[in-house]
Length: 258
Ligand SMILES: Cc1cc2nc3c(=O)[nH]c(=O)nc-3n(C[C@H](O)[C@H](O)[C@H](O)COP(=O)(O)O)c2cc1C
Ligand code: SF4
Ligand code: SF4
Image 1: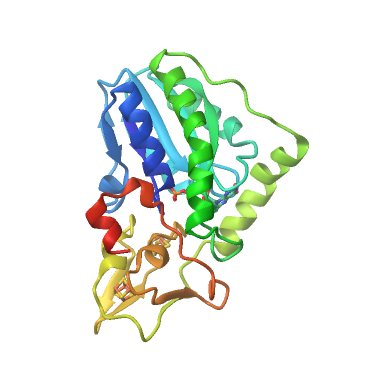
Image 2: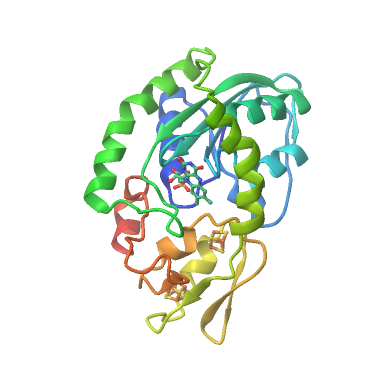
């Protein structure tokens, strides 16, 4: 089974492409996260977790969900992490998670996809994003091939800098940056509700025809990037930047609404 968490579609695209190669079922974690539910996946022989990297580790919300879920013993588990740049020392924490959950760790692979973290970084425009995805595709297929063959991933790079980012910067990032306080909908908002529908944590409510953000935000960027009217900003830090969403993962009909 392939389990996927995705804010702006990169990881969903990668997960679906791997699923086509391995023939595994594909499931979106939002299905459980939106209701705050855990799950029992006892009968699974193998598990592929596909998720974005957040501050050089698995998103906390995904780790927490995995810790609360029930898996069969020694299920072979691969982690495929999409990133804008690099995955740091995420592998160490994924290995530890597998040990704690009695899963058989099969490795962590990073796939460079378009950057989506508007509050801090530049985000590629549509043409540049398409080129980055095209460059990523052979690597996604190699990763899918290894999973289909039941092989572990090669051990990723692990420098002192990688270790510092994943161990020290990660908790500081969560403490200081991961909140919804700065999201605002501007005058362009027509109250369509798309932002509330796409939030994987059900953290947005429409009040008097405008979205209001709650406290349960993981900064996945789905709301700001999927708004059809480009009405959402994150303080001043997102102003003027492209609102990125991975069009490759959408059907033609869905693309028309972006
Ligand atoms: C909260 C947050 C933190 C991020 N941290 C990192 C990071 O540490 N390193 C990196 O290379 N990319 C980082 N990114 C970029 C995403 O990992 C990357 O764009 C990913 O492919 C997005 O996947 P998605 O479209 O499935 O949500 C971060 C993005 C977000 C939203
Ligand atoms: S998706 Fe955009 S236009 Fe629709 S309700 Fe949310 S902010 Fe308003
Ligand atoms: S409020 Fe926006 S950024 Fe936060 S989890 Fe929901 S969709 Fe993602």
